[in-house]
Image 1 (cartoon, each protein chain N blue to C red):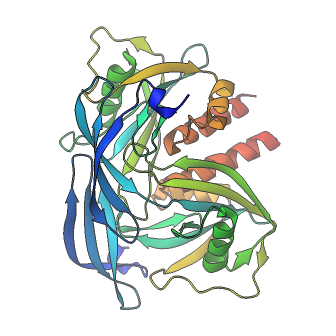
Image 2 (tube, one colour):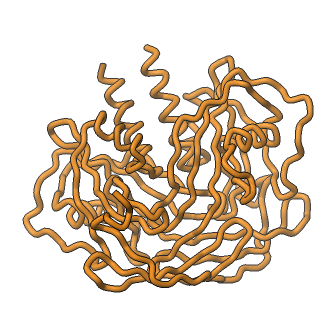
Image 3 (cartoon, rainbow over the protein chains, first blue to last red):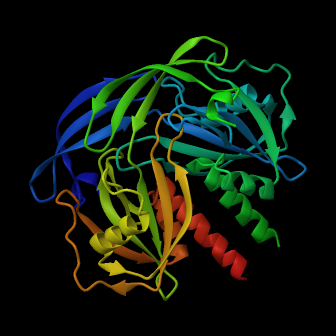
Length: 189
Length: 189
């Protein structure tokens, strides 16, 4: 079935770029709804990102602590990074680059776990999630981006849950990561 | 510790509204980084949303099928809805309104499970997740928003996982919901 055959299909009849940024763009589309009425849709255009769940040999996960301007607070999140517009589709390479830059680590055991759109009502940002095990120090660590300031913390699942209660772990990919981690542990029992 | 004491703190020295929409606004902030350098941050300002995981008495979850303009496809998602700017902080009321509008259902068993920021690098959108059980038909169903066209589907966990493989279930709150559901089942065994 082509998308146009969907009985929910909204035909785009006009589109205008309202904001062009370095992280995302904003388009406003004029659409025709299934009942023939006209409406507008506001859309954040984003190249997507990767998130990495780095499991250490001693049963911990690695997080980065950093400032998040939109939240006006420090957070603890799993390592992640935006896909550059020219990076094509090798998301494992993006994940390895971020592990190198943020953690100084690499691995030959990187496995895609899932992928999800962060906020499908108004954004096309897709986050692809990897599980990294068998972690090794890189020989040549790449520098962080010039606007990145972060520290690395290793936490057990219980320690990570305490950081959820404190509000430091508070983002979708990291809350997902902890639930996935707890599921892995529940299945092992 | 106040946020200004954070060693990662970025002081905002200027802010400009670049886009004002009905779903979100976009601000660009000029900030001072921890090393004294200046940079800009692009921020999506959003009032937040609720997501509801509706568990039926026969062990299924309820999803809505709708068109998502940003993804140019149909999706299956758990019911959800934006918080209006004037709704204050009673998120259970927002969740019950969405259950009424989208499903024609209500409950006296609504429990907050978690909350997370969808994309903390550039957005302040916070999604609060509820678990709804003991579902009952409402006596007076509220109409959908005039721009909403959706259908309701009940799926088992295995049926939902098949929809992930098909790409219909593909958003952060619903992928989280399935992982949470699987964790509940694993703990029951």
